[in-house]
View 1: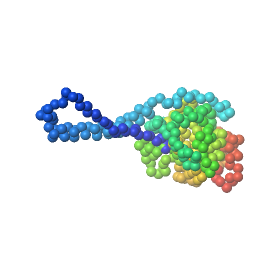
View 2: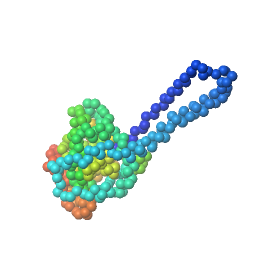
View 3: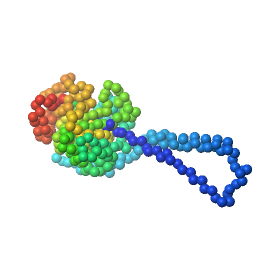
Length: 340
């Protein structure tokens, strides 16, 4: 729920040139020339000044990044996107203000109210790395990526492993489109995703008991399932920072911790990735993490969920109600623990 973003420093242009032009008639007698010891003293001063100028871009870099972060989102003209009515909901969409103030984003704190802290997330510039078992590893800027892949809006149910749920209007593109863009090799079986890592920006990443950066993974079959959705916006505008801007995942049939936020890396691999929560407590947070009301979490029931914003309790649905789309993905995996 990278790594994050990665911030990129300014390139420093350290070369300066001075051309001294001598013009006939301007030459002066030697007796008027500056004494050598004074000339060398002046050279020392100029050298010190040049050093200060060379260092100035470093000092200006932080301000530059701050200025970039405060610029209007370059992709704002793409919203709102046309809604895909295939994924209609059986419940009202959660109010944006409610959704925007009830979030898990451990990079910025363990409270649900991380909205203010998450505004420190610098989302431009933002580069996404695609590597591993692909034809050609690459890095692509987030705005270039967004404009290469057509956006649409989808309304999905969201179910947290903590037994609460929401309904959200996401904007983005199918994960399958990114897979197609990445051109993975036939030997790739999984996609490992990683969020940003910046301890100065994200105070939660200073906590040594979490194995930062946040990592999650899915099978290639899951990544290319039609429901798997890479999110760039919500509620008709670019994604808010507390939701995992500028790029997150939405897997509506799985518990929310699988839907990694602020993605900076997609690595195609033949080894099953181990997510951050699985690394911390594999008995509670497994690789598959599919929603199942009949399989309780070790510390609470999953039979029902609280709808955030209304307080209503609803029975939990198998695969969060998306079984018709995803149940076939897990046939023949009876020996696997499919439910977190």
